[in-house]
Image (cartoon, rainbow, N blue to C red; front, side, top):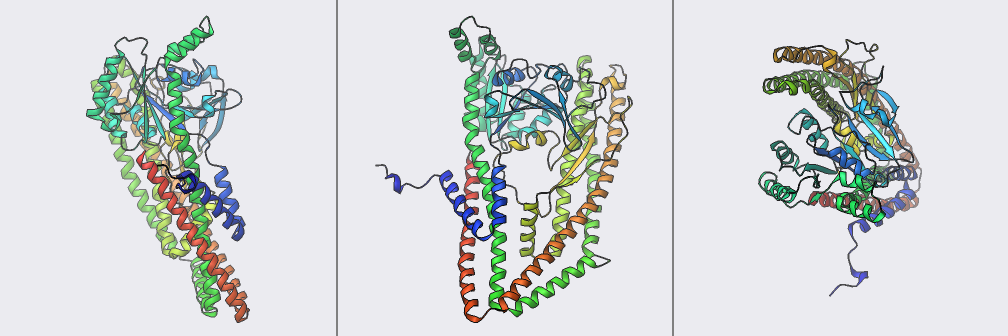
Length: 612
């Protein structure tokens, strides 16, 4: 028998909503500034989810994207030679597109009719422009009002360097739309790709394309399911959606509305739309709630520390004041010291970062060169011509990985130094202060002269603590990944990487000449990346020094505020102090309980994510 509604346990979304409102009310009463910050975090939450589309060359991937959006021909289909450029589709009142260079240049508006020139190495870019890191395309498509789509480059296959880019993008996706066609079962490259991303991608939707062109598609579907069971068992029970983008396009030219409706239904495109929307909508809402709950927990732990300090002031009085004065003098001395031991430690750690990075750059460049030398040996004449753009993709990927590693390491440096300067309680306060400030340190690449025909460094990209293309294009797609608040703002490093097209250096399709060209291109890339990183680490050291000095200033100001509260407490008579102490105890209990509740709900949200 079903329990009465009043006795049923509220669902997780209901619990989250009720707790959020209760804790926001508490914050507004005690600390209105923190409450406003939490409201801002909630207002900024992403309102719709996104899906990354991947697939081998000529699988009908871009045609399916066009059908899902309802705009045939929008995403260039079967571009002769793809770059490492992603297409990011979103919603807007009017159609428009922008070439994006995150971290370096302002977006450049482009005409939709010229899109192929920006995403295909076989077409000429407009004079004076650089290849973009990704292209944003927005328009009034109903589906894009619910789900954003990222179309990844597919040329080269999932076992090529483009496949490596797709792999890293997939690992950051809320959902993956994996497109295979009905001509034959999974290739080895596709199975290897799925086996690799199987543990890191929460949701995969399979689309079996071109079913109208192959009568035996059902046998191919059965073979695919058997192959998944053997090579990527996590997806053995996954649903395949048979689709035909061509049939969907034919519906627009059908002679009658009934014929058009029949073609659209048989195309299967609407089913894929429905599947993506239903799978992602709930997760997007919970992601927004998780971000709000994390902000609440951060604000409450800061408030808890303040209340505990107020309680000590009311309880111990002069003893607390003496401790605070001594701590203020200690931190002031650290800030004014000419030697500044924390700066020495920071420089030591940055030097270690520089050495580690040099080794990592060398290793990754050697790996790229080794991979392509083998690819050259195995390539026929046609494949040989396709390799230069893949070298570009590989070097962009390496540059992004290096950027990610250096940004992570610099944040570690900041944590190490702050850990020596401050107590755990003080660090918690600093975390909250920097989280509310929300002003990242940006370490940009050095300015360069205008590019000439001899320049090979024509792509500029920025990395905000993530992989070069994938996470810039799909960082908004990450599921319920609730990152801790860093002790200092995230450091973003913008690196230059290669754009080595065959036309920039005339060479024959001879393998030996290609190997020579490859060696020179890798050497140029290594030299440039080394130079950029050396310059940027110098800049990072300066900005980290300022940030750490700011942290010291914030803590000293905080101690001065605590001392003023102690002085006020000392002037109270016994009865008033007892009354105030009781009120602080009650408020502290409310805040501590609220923080514990927020953290428990965060754990529940993560648990739901992990079971998905």
